[in-house]
Image 1 (cartoon, rainbow, N blue to C red):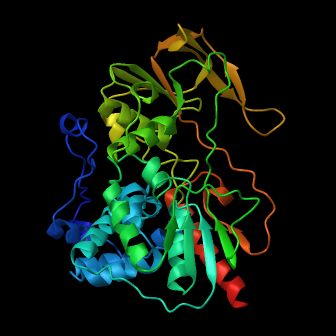
Image 2: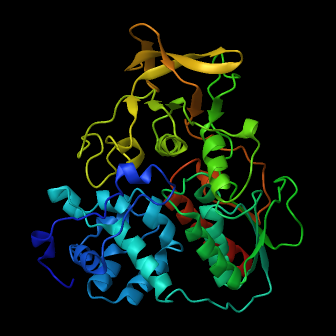
Image 3: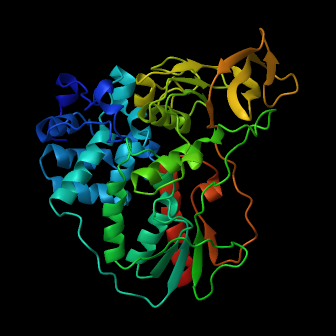
Amino acid sequence: MGDYKAFLTIHRKEAGYRPVHDRIHDFGEVEQTLNSGDRRQQASRCMDCGVPFCHWACPLGNKPPEWNDALYRGDWELAYRLLNSTNDFPEFTGRVCPALCEKACVLNLTVHEPTTNREDEAAITEHAFEENYVRIAHPERNGKSVAVIGSGPAGLVAANRLNLLGYTVTLFDKNEDAGGLLRYGIPNFKLNKAVIDRRMEVLRAEGIRFKFNTNIDLTTLPEGFDAYVVATGTPEARDLPVPGRDLKGVYFALDMLAQQNRVLAGCEFKRDELVSARGKDVLVIGGGDTGSDCIGTAHRQGCRSVTQIEIMPKPVEGPDDPQHPWPEWPHTLKTTSSHEEGCVRRWNMNTLRFIGKDGKVTGAEVQEIVWRPNPDGGRPLMEPVGKPEVIKAEIVLLAMGFLKPELPKFAPNVFVAGDAALGASLVVRAMASGQDVAHRVDKYLSGK
């Protein structure tokens, strides 16, 4: 630890977001960056704890004390090598990870000012690309081949690890480009797609083969491979089967998010195909990150207003959560950059039906509810209170999560990774699963 008193004298400093009045007019990344001097000073705050709970909390097993110390000392290349040893793509997690490590930081327990691990991670990786620390590997081939189906975070990590071990890897994806939800779910204002493209160029140069626009039937996998990795994610969104669901203007969240990302990539759609919030009152049903992404996208499309409703109770307004004490992840109220841009948020709201005129949605009838303990145990019981009301909306976006897929029974040489195995979760957990599956594939094919 370079400066063992830094955590006592230096406060946490975040880069922050671009001003609201500026950022809502484009899809550029909202997060700003600190200069290298401030970034190194922030890295110096890491206490190098005897028991690093940040390492414990990270699904990838990242080692922030080690690379923060290297960053503080100005050795950016060493910082990247240490970071990249556990994290295949830190430029992704440095932008979209909720930073489980920071909530488990001892400085979060003591003064609620954890080390800026996520921002440090992003800065280290950007510096690595700028200074050519990201070098092309040329693995010696071992004569065996692996097919990876799905190029989201889990598939990309599995493909990367197996390729570096010498396997010939072919990566199949149903979409026109790589990234999965990184590309077609997360908005550009959180993750610029040039960041994905830059890494894909590295993977191609290292020998990974990509086959896009290819739908693979999981019951008849392509022949000619020694092993298979299924990383197809959770493609089915949770629906809301209430009266009026078939009205025009009621969409799944990804109908908007994926289309908007494709438009920014140069794809063209007919006017009647566009999912646009321009000039409309928007209702987002679902209080998670996907719902937040819908809010930010609606603002950039020029909506009139946004309301977000959630069926669950309002989380505690932290920073501490008595039900999940440190170093666990606190289930506290989260206010994102999209929420800051303007949004009415309501909790404990159940949707009864959608209302429309001439086949188009004009609103949603909702009712406030409370959750009561179930006398038989299990899931709490939902009890309506008050009178139903109507929320005006010309576009409704369903952002209620995704269903874990039912997969066929596979042969012993087929391995399942990421959300397809775990159910919908964080990007960082999908990446950790990709690492684990790559290790298991290697053990299987090498006979260890």
